[in-house]
Image (cartoon, rainbow, N blue to C red; front, side, top):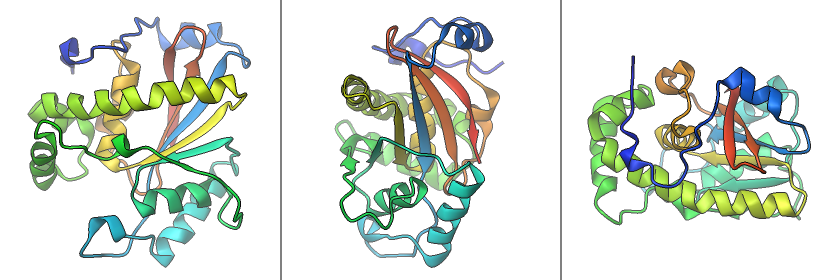
Amino acid sequence: MFTIDYTHIYMYNWNQSSHSDYTRKLSRKECMKIAFLRHSLTLLADDDSSRVLSPEGIELARQKRAANGNPEFDVIVHSRKIRTRQTGLIYAGKEDDPNVKTYAVPQLWMLDYYGSTRVIDAAYDRFGNSGVRSYFDHCSEAMYEFANGATDALIPRFMHYSERGMKNVLVVGHAILTQAICVNLIGDGPLPADLLDDVLGECEGYEFAFDINHYKFEFVGLLK
């Protein structure tokens, strides 16, 4: 059985019960629905920050939105990369709304405080999009450094959104990094094999329920 070294998770150990028992305890009013999504297909560019969605990526995001029931979101969160904001607007059905506000969170991309960016980049050259299990096996400290920083940035935002009555949140990020955040949010609860071994495709992700009262996250399922 796969296990993770939880000594690196320093804030969000939820001690959850089983998924089924936990889900039954949550009411609709208590829960925030959070969709974590990888950005869609992009055009190639010399500068990673300038990569934008390709025509195929735009169409794919529209198709994924339709396939998942045209979901509605109260707020869109994304990294500083253009492609994540574009994906969020399309997936949320807001691409034609010039007045929509979105929120960039730098920690959804790698901030190289202790050299973790080089470690994760090297691991990506080796493993690619092979599932997050390989990364935690190979460079767990770097992965937790990133995941903890992203979690620290996201949790206060989720609480703030909840206080303002926002219950449906879309977070758009990047492949392996999005999976690392989701592993961290589950904490020491049971980790679904889908989350550990799934190769996350463009514009795919995961849905979570966030119990506001108890600060607990529940993995709901895949967004394909």
